[in-house]
Length: 53
Image 1 (cartoon, rainbow, N blue to C red):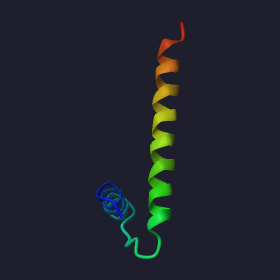
Image 2 (cartoon, rainbow, N blue to C red):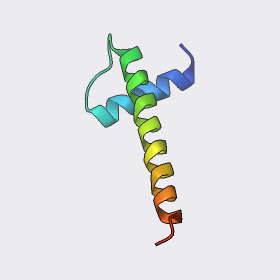
Image 3 (cartoon, rainbow, N blue to C red):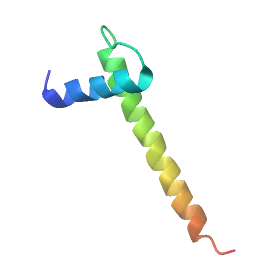
Image 4 (tube, one colour):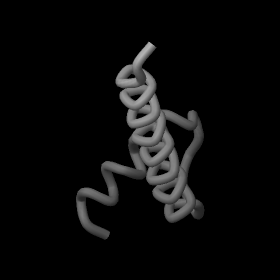
């Protein structure tokens, strides 16, 4: 396991308030999903701001 993966798991544990033992891959998948949702929200927000009123 590389250090970046360890850091991602530690971050997920903090955010989810749970231990990742046995669920490490799920925690990483959750973080990836969460970040994708945040990017989509940011893009939507920018597009809404660019709309002529």
